[in-house]
Image 1 (cartoon, rainbow, N blue to C red):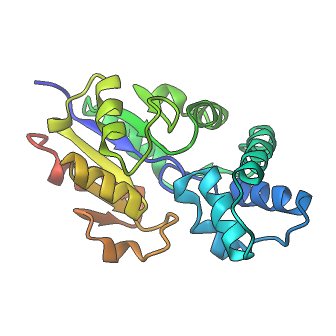
Image 2 (spheres, one colour):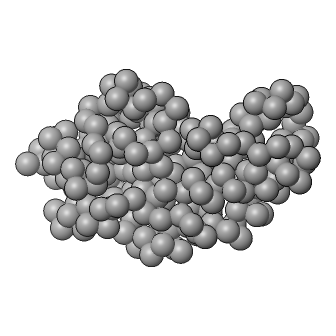
Length: 225
């Protein structure tokens, strides 16, 4: 039987990346002569990736979303962020122990994120986490991003798994919608970057700390008693 695959979102799920992402956004905005986006507002803009953060920030300022401006700011964002990717970003409490627990049961672990794959790997490298995952897939890996369920299915295949024996772990409505569309059960964490309170989004399980993850996964995973 194929081993169970547990697929994680990255920003707001595995790692608290908000400090570095929001600083980058506001550096880029300052270079454009725009005021900073306050931390609490920007934190809930993270789930869609850097380009979407920029677009939402411009909307807040009532600025037009010209493609050229967004492209320029996106390139600036990626350059600055790559140089500061783990200045203050840290794994959420209990993550390493939870990954150890799942790995000890023989589960495959993977990452499915709307972050660019190269930046995802750079971040996980900096935090010593890359080797834990059988696949790390971003929005550019397949040219697809969440909530399209195909990115999740392809991530599972890249990890050597089977979508019929998989569980998604995420922090947002995008993650839940992706898992639902793929027919995969989903665990939501309540410490991430969801603009809508995560408890209102009807994940199959909701956890508040990584010490609750193994139990949630085992309750949802087909045949993983």
